[in-house]
Length: 142
Image 1 (cartoon, one colour):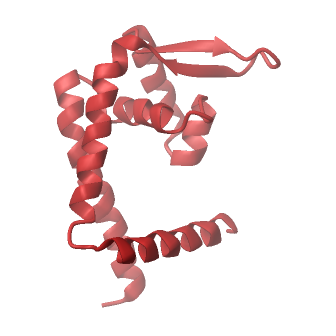
Image 2 (cartoon, helix red, strand yellow; image 1 turned 30 degrees about the horizontal axis):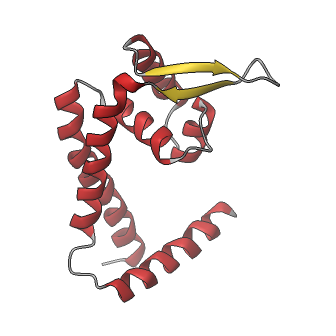
Image 3 (cartoon, rainbow, N blue to C red; image 1 turned 180 degrees about the vertical axis):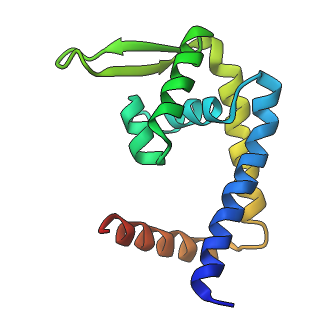
């Protein structure tokens, strides 16, 4: 089989498996997949806290992120704070009401990583991390 196709299929399989792991938590807490991803992004990336950051770094459609942020805010899971220097920018903060869902979703992420790294020893994992880092750097040049 073509190596490029193998890589693309692997990427798609990874995304599908990741979403499957997260969907269990999403269902328990009554969240959509996008809402769960927004909460996890904000939790895992403290320096990136705007909807634009989520759209840019996760490559999610702007409309989906906007809808999720609106829904999470209405449920009391997120608050928006106006930037002190540029009032057009809203910084998103996770509110205490969302912490149980976030912790459960974070555990799902950890379970997913254990699942995909099963059978890979620590030295091999270092090589995988390095190779993926180089690939990520190369992709940013496109």
